[in-house]
Image 1: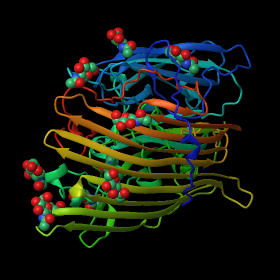
Image 2: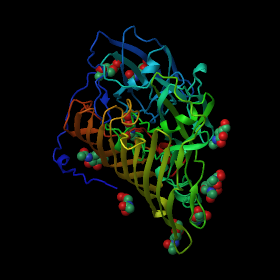
Image 3: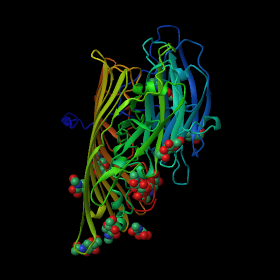
Image 4: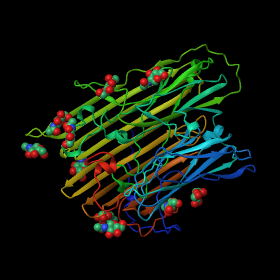
Length: 592
Ligand SMILES: *[C@@H]1O[C@H](CO)[C@@H](O)[C@H](O)[C@H]1NC(C)=O
Ligand SMILES: *[C@@H]1O[C@H](CO)[C@@H](O)[C@H](O)[C@H]1NC(C)=O
Ligand SMILES: *[C@@H]1O[C@H](CO)[C@@H](O)[C@H](O)[C@H]1NC(C)=O
Ligand SMILES: *[C@@H]1O[C@H](CO)[C@@H](O)[C@H](O)[C@H]1NC(C)=O
Ligand SMILES: *[C@@H]1O[C@H](CO)[C@@H](O)[C@H](O)[C@H]1NC(C)=O
Ligand SMILES: *[C@@H]1O[C@H](CO)[C@@H](O)[C@H](O)[C@H]1NC(C)=O
Ligand SMILES: *[C@@H]1O[C@H](CO)[C@@H](O)[C@H](O)[C@H]1NC(C)=O
Ligand SMILES: *[C@@H]1O[C@H](CO)[C@@H](O)[C@H](O)[C@H]1NC(C)=O
Ligand SMILES: *[C@@H]1O[C@H](CO)[C@@H](O)[C@H](O)[C@H]1NC(C)=O
Ligand SMILES: *[C@@H]1O[C@H](CO)[C@@H](O)[C@H](O)[C@H]1NC(C)=O
């Protein structure tokens, strides 16, 4: 509940565009994040760069890139990747999943190109997957793109990995995938919920002393803007103006089950891709985490006494929204709209002793009181019976605790979302807050404990205006991501590092989109991004402001923010003719 007041005044001064020419002539787009050195200094003679992929993603739906990785012949403990993409033309933002065999190791999304072309680089810590990098792997990169007469943008992608020995990477000894495990057929191993059943069975070795599950999950299609979804009974409220709305409420919970017992939950971060809400927000600054979707973690060490009996145990990931009954009671729907892309990894830390007492199938004590939901919905009609406005809200709270002889995993989570649609659904605002506190503690008086707390504020207003020959979107947003975490067990797939982390980041802006028959559509916008973080003892701060595709103020210029002076004042889908909002955003007025 600690939404910090942010002062943007410092950015409102400079109006002079910072113009740095880019040798390739392509505009650089970027995510504001704490820089990760691609080639850190090695403390022995290991310093190797490997090209993992150089590939053009054209008609690539169901056709992932497949390549082979062979470990370098030196003693490495640190792996970083450089993912660089170029694109020119017109194209949607696309989701991409990178796998080593059956293991998802990176989830990213693409920026939408322009007619003059864009490029971006994202450098990512990958040492958490050391136990995989030590052996040969099939690299599968699934970036499903489509090329048509209208959508002409290819994604030309290069992926390099750098291997070194820094002596400071703490990583898991063994990893097991919670995935569809389809690498043998050169396919992507994601589960799509609710269609698939995301269950796997494993024997957990007796040598494991700690176990953590990372969960990678995001909504697509009817679930991309899950935080703006309405109650299922309201999906047709404004059919004649904006068509179908999506249901199951704006609340989502991702759940992990072990042998059918709840082991922990994730209340997801509302990621917004570069075509999301209004494209004018996201060039050249993309949304928070759009280039690297964090994978929250659930420490399942309390379940080790249950699963270390030499037998197979099931691990299942589910995603649920809410069903709201006529009397206003909210319950888990045990399903969601179509669809969520989900995988997980089980990270095992081995202590070398297989003589651990086999605990004989002893389940942890679970304290999981029913979550508290409080919901409200109010549909107002005008005097002739037309639905005029809808206000609704969901407030949720829950605690969870799993305890066994040595460890206790506890979670405390809160959520609220207030939604309001007016102008017969043409205008919608959602004000959402998610916050939580997770801890893993050693049982006993002197037991150590490690906490992660987070907060995700989100406020979005978007308004459509339609006339016989034109369509506009006016939108503004304010959002953020805060993380405060103690030192973890190894490199965290959530904090993206192993030491203590403090992260405070905010984005705010307004955007406009206009399309008029027989004219090129235009997109404009202004975005402010403020980042303040400390990771592994390094502090990093950056404030950037962009207007109409150009960076006008930046406290750290040269950090992926060089800007072409010729950036036209047009948006992602600049082209002749009129795009319906629904074809562009997957929701709102018009045809898909
Ligand atoms: C990342 O790779 C691209 C293309 O391969 C290269 O131009 C760029 O300099 C690399 N960035 C870093 C930080 O190594
Ligand atoms: C991407 O690759 C294709 C095919 O090689 C090439 O025609 C195109 O110019 C490249 N696009 C960019 C933006 O470099
Ligand atoms: C998935 O399958 C397992 C059995 O393999 C079953 O126990 C579980 O209930 C199923 N999950 C769903 C969501 O249907
Ligand atoms: C108003 O909303 C209700 C509930 O969704 C729906 O059944 C009804 O058809 C709507 N009325 C109009 C005129 O669209
Ligand atoms: C929604 O509107 C479409 C097009 O006007 C119509 O075909 C459909 O029957 C409507 N659906 C509902 C549930 O009102
Ligand atoms: C929630 O509603 C959906 C759609 O009506 C239904 O399929 C699902 O079974 C409901 N969930 C529960 C737990 O009743
Ligand atoms: C109610 O809304 C409908 C649809 O926009 C409109 O035709 C009608 O005139 C409105 N009625 C009143 C009393 O404003
Ligand atoms: C959302 O924006 C529209 C258009 O700018 C405005 O009319 C409306 O009042 C805003 N809604 C809220 C709740 O601020
Ligand atoms: C639309 O933009 C293209 C260049 O991207 C230009 O050639 C064309 O003249 C423009 N059309 C209109 C109607 O402005
Ligand atoms: C950004 O573009 C919009 C639409 O073309 C224009 O109205 C606005 O003045 C531009 N803003 C700046 C600061 O150039």
